Image (cartoon, rainbow, N blue to C red):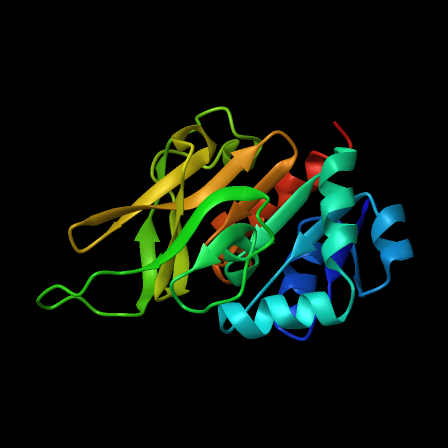
Length: 207
């Protein structure tokens, strides 16, 4: 089975990510070793929490450069939740610079009457990139599970792979550019549809 390195920087629900990838047909390895990251077939960057502590811990464990190198190598890379947000240049949640791999900012949902923040629970995706490998055989407007108060706003609209609507705001919740993909929702918590998405990611390693 393909080996997926789950990047460990003390900011993710690693057990859930491991379990989801195992069900999807991969061999997950939780690691903060640059050597293991370089040798894995694919990488997953999970994340739960706040932007500044996440990027600080990532840099403290010297993982910034290995992440850039892994993406540049062409191997499949998947960011999940906060792991998607820190790929961007900055966030309204904090003051730290993000990884800057995707141009744009992470923004907070605008307050509206009767709008719940965080955006938490099940919501449907509007698939913008129909040919994105993650969406294969997911059907139209699949349901995924969300927990977030901030959303990504890429400068280049072509990197947006899926959007969803919360209140009156339609926001990017997935990006895809070549081998780099990231999702704001939690596929590992999104029942059979989420596992199917992870299986699509795993299949990219053997395509």
